[in-house]
Figure 1 (cartoon, one colour):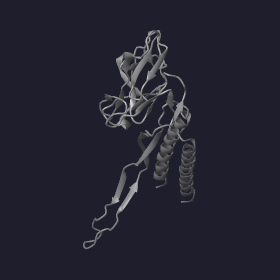
Figure 2 (tube, helix red, strand yellow):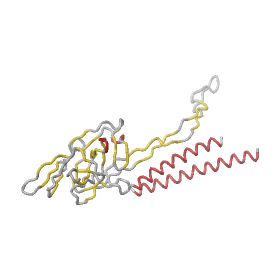
Figure 3 (cartoon, one colour):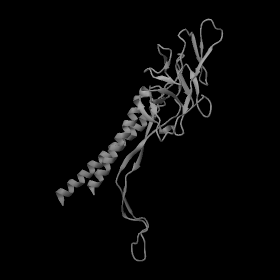
Figure 4 (cartoon, one colour):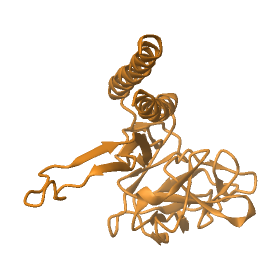
Length: 262
């Protein structure tokens, strides 16, 4: 019986260790542009049914509750919390933030598409609007080499001011991707997410329409990590880890007592 308790406590240690890893990653990315915090979700392992509720206890009576013994816990998965981060003004005309739902679409190496909330973009030597890694923002936007000013509207319309013209020239429109189930997107690192069968297919459209967020030029979205909340969760996880560790020590002492005295 004590060895079973040790096994259950070990599953608790593994689960709390995983939760601590999730919290550590959240805190490590507290200053990462567009980062969304993760939350670890737990579920019970299979139960051992010793006596089923409602089973016959005698020829005339039945057990009212039964006897079910749990076998531990495991991490069911991690859920990304997609709440809006605060917007910070940068003054850079190529810094963009989404005020609301949606993602920027980026072409990754090999032609694969990635999605991000981090809008710290730049202009490449060829005039393309790209990420800091040089990945092109899709649909492609080419800024004229002699442009003196670039204005991006809340609907994603990009206008360039060039010498000799009194009015700006429309050079394209940045579109925003939405998903039926955004929490189903797969995190791949470098602030990028990828489409999965769970997320559903990307639906590109105009910013500010059909539930998509508006684009704010000269702003960046901060991480939505709340340091105080994460520290509280960290302390709670540490205490739960200590309790499970104490359970293993207590079970070991019980086994030692049986071996020495019985």
